[in-house]
Structure formats: structure tokens, C-alpha cells
Image (tube, rainbow over all chains, first blue to last red; front, side, top):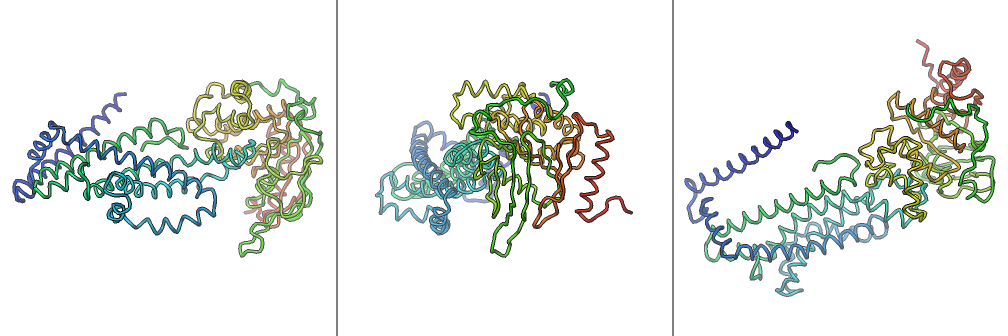
Length: 260
Length: 289
């Protein structure tokens, strides 16, 4: 236990130093190299952040953004896993969907913002769509890759243990693809956070993206920084939870000991 | 070794047969597993066409321990995949008694060399063993009871709740063995099952396998590239020609009782003959300067 604790302490210490140095560099830059109106100091940013927190405005924006991410992300994952599994299983489906995917992949969700507003209006539906779009492609591709790469030996083993096609799919192929699906979902989560800001910058009345965009009008770079820091913290925190959940519950899907 | 010693059991390979559930499940009895003039060509008509087997005939008696030996790439695994029903021969017939093999089935279960991929990593050891029963719709409690019996048999009782990644190489193979045996197959197909194990584990597993075979009397087709292993285990050792277009070169019947010692005169004599046959086939003398 002792070396493990020491290792943890060391890790925490290095993390703390890394964050402190970054804040220190930011403070130096703000103090000596930049106009105060362009780059707010860390203290100013934290002060504004605290104000926005205590007024409840920040939490409100965070809540709204999170809700949008959650809906779009959940829909994207569900449909992505379904289509990806079909693609991986049925070659005709793969041949049918793949060119579409390759065409859509380079089209950033941001590029779809104007179109989605025309299609779905300025309500939340257009923002769900943007996030869904960013998520679904990644999840499809990863799921399909996972389904295809089920080891042949494992399929043969299931066959001689009496499993039929549908049983093999449900009980062998899908679990074999879980590590791939989770990786896809984790990457897609990052994309969902990128998408939400883009979606909220245009035609939204709330959310972190709106907060950042609105402060441009007021030349309030400190609020912008609050928005950016919030995004970073939020994303890192959620990714951390995701990682923890994988480590805790998904070990059993992996062939070897994992430590993501 | 903690498990029942084979020396206390009858040592003749032709002892009384234990009737298994598999036999009663089966419509008729059979006395021979046969490949008749089987040829196997991969990618026919394409530039990478490969003729693995040409007119191969193999006859395995029921309850026989049949070792298939040969240089690498000679089509040993192809033979096994065909018997398992994972592939269909380009020509020829595979039959068990009068039944023709057309697809995979629980009467012929395979133990693979690559246990990491063959086991289901998301299932605990006992769940891996229960898998085949669960597929057949055996109720959970009954499946657990039946699996427990075979986990005991292979010495995995204390590891039943571990996941495959927590098992050693030898224990993984025990798990595969239990997973196969719980279905009480008539034929056990083993594809170099102990080749990836260290020398000691390998010897222990060979002994265990013989003990289990002597108890259940299933037919075993055992693939190996290890002459020593083949002559210690097999009642019959078949040497395959090197590929392509491989077939059986010759068969050696080994009447010697079990357990066999590598130093027994009969064993060393047959070892020399099989080894000579292998070297002749490979075309390299391993003893010449």
C-alpha cells in the first residue's frame, strides 16, 4: 500500500505543479505582455466566475448546455451503436452506409449550424441535431470496427458450443465490440462539447456558447475566459467520470488488465 | 498434482466405456469418424488459390486418442476445422458413423491453442463453462450445478469466479476443457492446446487430459507438432505430408499402456520412428552436421 500511496501523492503533486505553472504563466502574460482588456488576469477571471456562480447565472448556462449535450449524445450513441452493429454484421449495409459516412466525416458539425437552424428552427431541436451529428458518425465507425474485429476463434468457439447466428451476434459479437464502442463514445463526448458551443453561438438565449458569444458584444473578455475555463473543467470532469466508469465496470470486457 | 492420479485407474486404453449423455442424445451409435477423400482448396480460381488437402483419408475409431502430427503449414488445422464443421471441404466427405458433418455442433467441441481469444473475456470462468448449456436453454441453476462438476474435474473450483485475464495459461486451458466437457461431446478436437504452455504445465495438462479421457472415453483428435507429446498421448499418431496438397503420409499405432514414460523402451523406439518420418518429410536431417 505504501508505494501505491506514494505514487498517488507524486502524481497529485505533479498535476498540481502543472496547473499552478499554467496559471502563473497566464498571470505573467496578462500582467506584462497583454492589454488588460484583451487578456484578463486569472484573479479577475476567477472573481468574475465567482460572481456568475453566486448569481446562479453560470450554473444555469452549464445546466442548459449539459442538457442539450446529453440529449444529442444519447441519441447519437444509441443510433450509432445500432447502425454500426448492422454495418459490421451485414456487408451490404456497410457498403451502402460507408460512402455516406466518408462523405459526411469531413463536414464539421459547425458547418451544419446554419442549415440545422433552417431545418429545425432556433429551438433546442437544432442544437440536439448538431450534437447528434457530431456523435453518431464516430460511434458508428467505432462500433462497426469493433463488430468486424471479433476474433474468428471466438466465433468458432461459440459455434461449436452450439450458438446460432442470432445468439452469436447478441452474446459474442456485441460484447466483443464493447471496448471499441466505449472508445468511440469517449471520443464522441469531446466532439459533443465542441458541437454545443458552436450550436449555442448562433441563435441561442442560454448555454455556455451563448455566454461566450454574448460577452463579445460587451467586450467582456473576463466572462469569455470564465466560459472557456468552465468548458475545459466540465469536459475534463466528465471525461474523468467516463474513464472511472470504464475502469470500474468494463474491465470484464477486455482481454487484459486495463488501465486507461 | 492435486487431482486424482491416473495410476489408480485402469491403465489399459480399452477399458469399460462410460456411457455419456452425449450417446443417449445421439440417434445412433457409431464406431468411426472418417474423412473420405477430402480435398480442400482455399480461394479456388483466384490468384491466391491454395490447395491445402488433397484426397485425404483419415479414420478415427470411436474413443480413440488420435494424434495428428506434421510440419507447420501441412494442413493439420484445416483437418480439424473440417471435422469441427467450421469449413466445408471442396470435395470428399466427413462422417461420424453414418451422419455426415455439415456444420458445427456440440457433439464435436474444439479446444483452441489461443485461449485468450477462445474464452469469452467478459464472462467469469464458471460463466464460460456454463455458456454452452445456457445457449441450449438449460435453466440457470441446473447449468451452474453441471458446470461446477466439470470445474471440479479440471481443478478450477477455487477459480470459478475469476475472469479469464486473471487465469494463468494452464488454467485458461483447463477452463476451455471444462467448457467443452460440460456438453459431453462425443468428439473432442484439440488444436495444439498445450503448445503455448511452459514445459512443466504442459506435462501436467497432458497427464490431466489422459485422466479425463480415460474417465469419459470420448474420441480425441489432437493436433500437435511435438513428436514427444504425440507418442506420450496418442493411441495412433498420424504423420501428415508437408503442404501444399497434403494428406496422411503414414500412421503409427502405439499399443503401449498409460501412463507412458518418455524413457520407456517402447516409447523411445516409436519416438525414433516417428521422428525419422517427420525429418524425412521435412527433408532436413536435424542430426547431420
